[in-house]
Image (cartoon, rainbow, N blue to C red; front, side, top):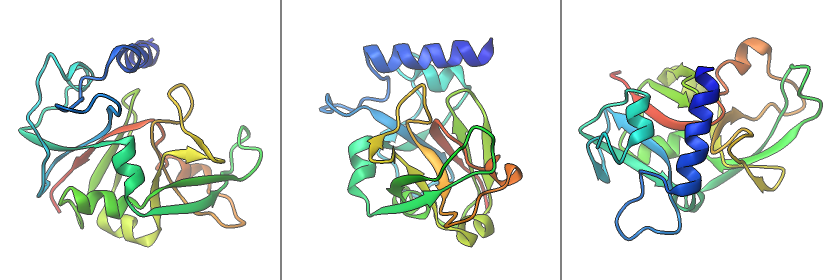
Length: 186
């Protein structure tokens, strides 16, 4: 029930206007917010009314760094092939997006542990060693099409599996429907 209500709230927000829209930004709503121990910011603290979905998830911050889909697409892009050892995952997919390390660096959060949070509240942590062990991307498209809400979008944390498959255990770190990253202390 909680997951259904969360996803319904997200669909309503995106259909009628995202609370993270910055002044002068009418065409590309914010799809990712990074907060916590960051060195750069492009927005002020949480506004409980305008940031209704962040507030619903009890995310609080004094400053944050936000990205629109266009801003993420403007970063250097990486294309990978990913496949997972899950019954539903019948074939490899082509994913495209910026490196997680590039996104974090833009927010002044390089070299720190991060927790990626999905729209339904699911979260997974990556420490600096895990971040550097693989080339993680925040995929925004799959097989040439944008990731959508109701699918695995707006963003999906994934890595290149080459001709292999990621194990079920590893797939627990592959957060899909990412909208928020909390940066912790090193």
